[in-house]
Length: 224
Image 1 (cartoon, rainbow, N blue to C red):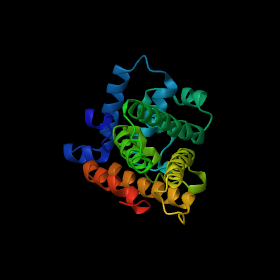
Image 2 (image 1 turned 90 degrees about the vertical axis):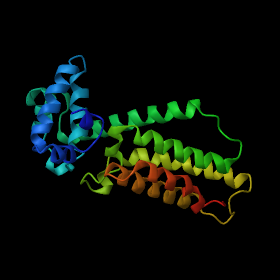
Image 3 (image 1 turned 30 degrees about the vertical axis):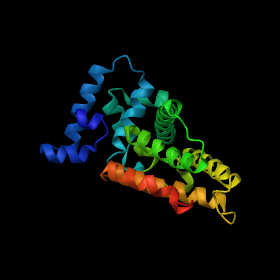
Image 4 (image 1 turned 180 degrees about the horizontal axis):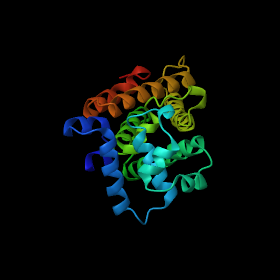
């Protein structure tokens, strides 16, 4: 149960233990209810949604299942969230908020280098570390089975892309970036690559190997 609550896929843990994933979800639900009675109902529903999205896509999850895992009545769940879509959006926003807070903490305590190129590299590295240390963040990167145009995570990725573009603009101003570089396109490419790397990590790829790739990602648009 500790492994699932810390972010591991329930299906993987259940297979290793020789139990059905539904049984593991029930154990996690019972443990969570006993340990988090003071947690608000809406937060419990959002966390249950995030947990289910580790092994299922949007179309496979029902509000009834989320309510059952959260230990609340279906009527209560719909009292807090008018629809499945609203609950899903809230779960993604909750994960994005947790990740933003984690990134802010890391950025606040680090000493930023003066060179813009090194700032890009450090920004990508610290972001990746924060992402891997925030289990709910998987909902921002994995394919959840919703159309891209309807993906609630896009707002977070757009904000990240804007930050990368600003850092690349600083590189351009100090002459460390090829003047022919299309900055918006470069920022989009880096953000897309980061999304793919993070999705792989949440699907089981070794995070240390991923960080080694992230450390070199800025070299795709900047001089070494």
